[in-house]
Length: 133
Image 1 (cartoon, rainbow, N blue to C red):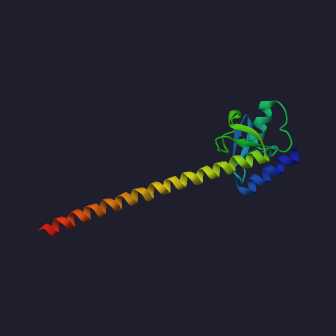
Image 2 (tube, rainbow, N blue to C red):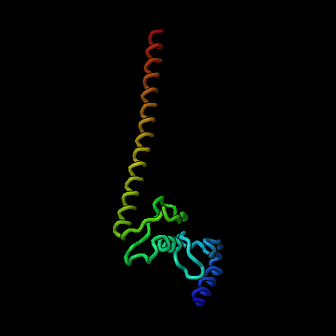
Image 3 (cartoon, helix red, strand yellow):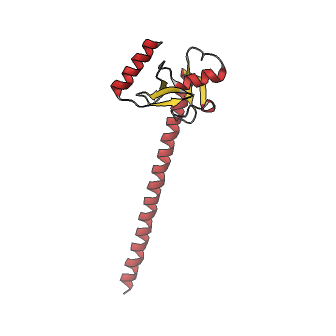
């Protein structure tokens, strides 16, 4: 365990990563923005789930952050899923994000179209008034 710790500390020093404390243990943020313990390199969210359920996470399972915040490692924000379930959750989230972007785009286009229609109406009124003069 001590060799692993030295490797982690060397890695922290090399990448100039800052450490912080979690549950009395030192952690750091890895390159994928997940928190890991410096003494074991274990992912904090996996440790929290194992502590919460009182046993190891079953093989082949992954932990999903329900609110999608990788730094929110509260037990109630973590969900054990299979790889397929996890992939489908994120696929569904991406699909929903695309739908929202499309809705926003349609709203902008609709507002612009209404603005153009209003300009056309104003132009028509002005030209009809000018013709009467």
